[in-house]
Length: 321
Image (cartoon, rainbow, N blue to C red; front, side, top):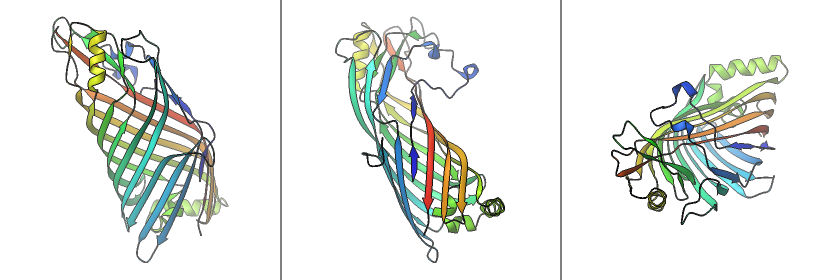
């Protein structure tokens, strides 16, 4: 069980240092006018697993609940593993509302509610060697309202400036990504056969034994990928209405995707039977398009960035029997 008492959401977070940001479009000088109010800021996650060491079979389920111990299910995941290979499925929702604080645009609501689903299908290979427990390949799909910053030029594509922005309530993306991660608190309990094959976890178990079960834990899950995203036709029509006299370019684009979960803290464990951890967790999602600029003075280009940071303290408890 994981319990996050309070999460803070930051949709203006940016992964890139200022010196590395693209100055061609003066992209990061634009204000962010779309404000999110997510439904949930506290979470409880329940996980369970069964392992047959003779067959090397692992079956597990996980459910994340909104706001309290018995709230609505925010995310559901499951996995089926045979020895070192695992198929993992995750599905969940992002719920809340988004408010537009910029200049009004005819036909565009000032506030909308959203209830968007995302999914993640991964094939994972457990390597059981530091610094990673596993390597994998993932397919991710999701939707979320985002701000669309329109671009215009009076000459060519290299001299773009911001035009009037809008937001897209129907934005969606589909991503293919490589994944890797580790969790020193959970792996020895849920995947004892993998931990037994790992020199790293054997050393960690000996260290915890010497310290009478006290120690530190670290958890990390990372995805890096590319995919296709689409600004909806409705949002492109709104962009043209906000910038009359120009025709919007195609809403499809190649996008880069980064998602990272990082947590660390203190733990107390009893010989792979019980583990209790108290720490802090950060979750980052970043999406950036390639292309979308206007080629000439008759076109209306676009660019968007979605960088979301969620973070908060977490209490973790696992029991194996």
